[in-house]
Length: 211
Image 1 (spheres, rainbow, N blue to C red):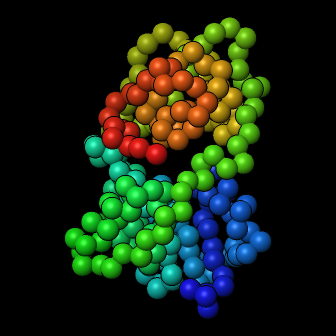
Image 2 (image 1 turned 180 degrees about the vertical axis):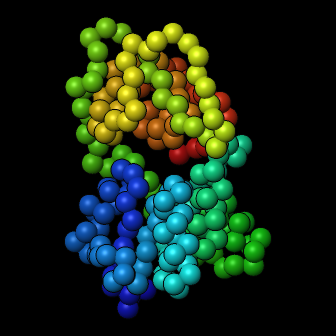
């Protein structure tokens, strides 16, 4: 590892960008110039980069390896473990995730290379209250779990956003009465911003997931 000096971190979400901000003084070069590729999480676009790096025999590091729930709710759960299997090194957030990676690698007779590095979700956090309404509100954030089309029927929402910057989302979580979600934000960010009785888990997506 000491001889490898160039690394690439593909961007997919805020976790990737935070990691780049903290490591940019050391390395972050275009993919073609990199001998290390650090893949964060489990999104399909990240999986594509991981496959490419694996086939090109680059040194692949998987950050947030070993995250698991009681129920495999969506494609992200499967893609996450596929990236781990291909990786040369596995960065995990806690001992629980380390045990998962060790078992996964053992199943395919692969030697694990685990580093417990913690989580970067709450590094450089900023709260933007510009989207917070004056009246009390409940916040609902739902992530689709599968390819199956999902149809929602109900009264018109008071406000609806296709996407929001992380800072505005955190501001909405901080000021809400109730936060109803199946997003990982309900595990990582919400417990530090609001009380436990304000958090309502939707569905099975994060069942058994622990920080």
